[in-house]
Image 1: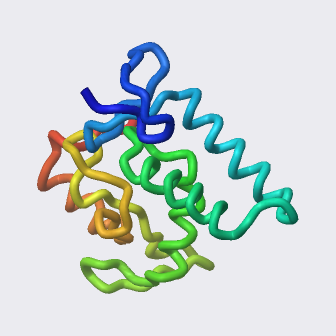
Image 2 (image 1 turned 90 degrees about the vertical axis):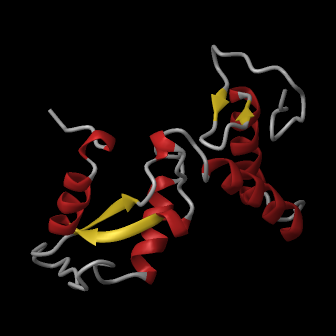
Length: 146
């Protein structure tokens, strides 16, 4: 059996632990402790080395990359990708944020529910029209909004 990615102890407790899309897991309490540790160390810069904080953030990102739903850092991930990519990766249309004529949406190339992840290489920024077409190709992989 695998062990928690944070505390390294084995034992998956189905009630509160998080099974990641790569079939590894973290104890929910360990993930919360990691989150708060990063938050506190970020505030208290005097007693924390940059290396220590970077290591904690790297561990957190490696966990959130395979989070079973949208990860807690989803908003930050989206902003970082929007800064790098300005056009639809399929048709090349640029987003005109001011008018929202071609709003760009996030698409998981391999859906998380089929083993995909939230790593940058699995995320595409595509226009609404192309996003609809992508999900029409594989309708069984897409939950319709009600």
